[in-house]
Image 1 (cartoon, rainbow, N blue to C red):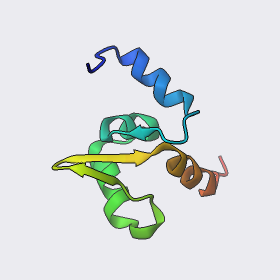
Image 2 (image 1 turned 90 degrees about the horizontal axis):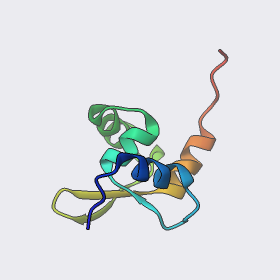
Image 3 (image 1 turned 120 degrees about the vertical axis):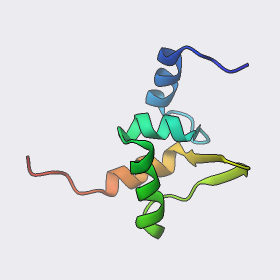
Image 4 (image 1 turned 30 degrees about the vertical axis):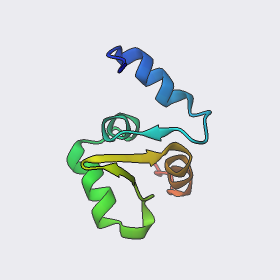
Length: 80
């Protein structure tokens, strides 16, 4: 059964303790605070720099949470 409670999903994404945790596109959008187009740009324009999605089926992509965390930690911090 799919949970419709947004607060539960946000808590699960924010926890990030499970190394096998997979993020949906919507969860990735919320985690990175990007629009769907922003996620598309990251996945197509950056090429090998952004973690690759796991394709589960037709229009079913998931990203490994630990790979997203590692990618974020490698990003330079803003001076402001």
